[in-house]
Image (tube, one colour):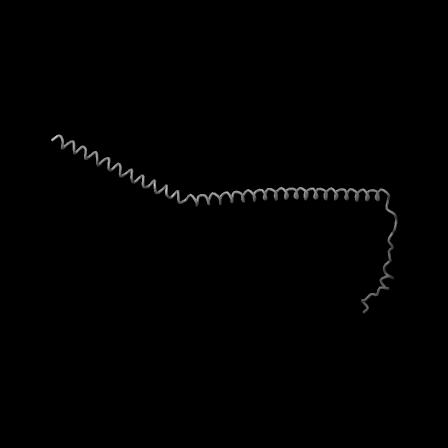
Length: 133
């Protein structure tokens, strides 16, 4: 316990210092005030810049919302128009099938007419050949 030193012994050994309370020089006080003022102005400027950035983002978001709303309306109109066209095509489909069928029949009839024409020409040439005999 001899190694343990009590508080009273320490106070005896160590000179207790007191804080000097001298006023700082006037130029230091003025420089501190200017530093704090300029720091406040700087921070105020930074905050104003940040506020302006947020205002710009807000404006961009509003414009984007408007554009997306317009695009949504446009795609809805296109979708309705496409649905109308599909409905009209569905209504016309039987008639288009009939036209296709008629076209196929006309093509077949045309082929038959060519064959008949060739056959009649051959008969005519045979008839003329028999007539000459």
